[in-house]
Length: 224
Image (tube, rainbow, N blue to C red; front, side, top):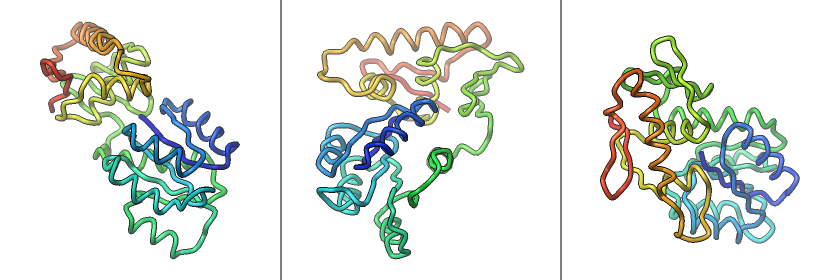
């Protein structure tokens, strides 16, 4: 999933980026209020990690602006401020969690996963999907007891559609969340179509995939 890290301590920002990329998150970095604001205006994110102590602006103000441009994102405040008032203020403004520095990176990942479970109402280790079961954490697809091999991009695409089940996602939305930002709109949407075709081909060997719908002229949807 797509993450924006807004952190002026560059060493910490790069450490978070490296750690989260290993966990299959797609990361953007911003080291100032202005950089963070510009990225939020241009892109949609699943998670936004905001440091309160930015050099050119207040993190609380950025959180308020971010909620307008990225209303569906999950927000985690990262800060050295330990005062109860700051925590309460951040949560009251719509932050989903508050993590005091210094923190361990596995704790950050665990909190992000907890938010995802609440946001997408995912409580089970295995999520049923038609005749299949999807393990989002271990990144496996099963038919009965047999594991089905999907490429990394195929699994990313399937899991993202699953987390947004019953919602039509455009090819551009899917592309941005799988490959990142585009410099311009001149990209080949056939990449998404090719991956969907491969997913269907691999899964249809075992059972029908009528739950994976093509919405003509728009994109795709998993209907549950």
